[in-house]
Image (cartoon, rainbow, N blue to C red; front, side, top):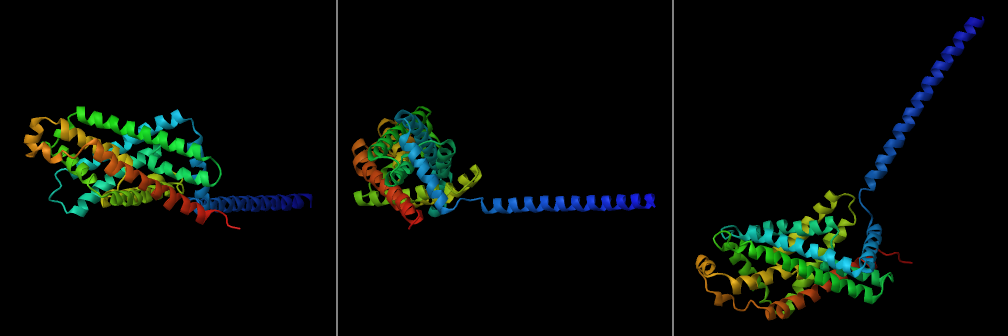
Length: 317
């Protein structure tokens, strides 16, 4: 009898242990499944969360030491200039390619510049216009916002001119028997012949696309997310010919130097006369392009994107 009871207890204990083990494994599986399900829905931030990320980023930028903003902006200006180098290369010798297709390729290649800016945490003036939301939200004052804009703008200019110098002394304008330099000249000259209103509106359109690209990166969780989401908005503004103040800090000075300091061998290679590009000068660069485009960039990024997103996604009681 005691032996029978012992066997019964042993069987009961074994069954109970197996049941508990199965329940434990089932609970563990369900917990992991639920966690994965939650993570699936959390692969992107909500619009309200994106707004908070944007405000935090803008506050950090505007309260950072001005010298650090300036140095960070130098790299951003250089990245955008290098992207325009890439763009120029894709447009050189593309006369036989349909216009829209050639511009599409150039625009997609240019997106590398903004991807590098975001990935490296550099400060670009066009996206820094969104610090306006930190000012509107009361996180910074007007002086801090404007100081950031000025330091970033100057830093971007230094970075762009640095790449202009490297490209010039590298002899890149003679690439493709001078056709690379001719692409620079034609692009730069086109930019200084917009009317003031046209340049202003093109600046607005450009920074709507740049800032919506940057804004969408706030939803991403990985570098791949952030890089991929920016390609089409950036490609769209470049392919469409919208005006980016920092990009023009490279393109038009590059055109000015090419027009006024190229050797006779260059002009012989391209079969043109330097007088045809005599209007590429500092006056046309600043007055006819840089000022209206910069003002347009501020409206496009600061008002059309940042303030609009702030107003629509902040809590309304």
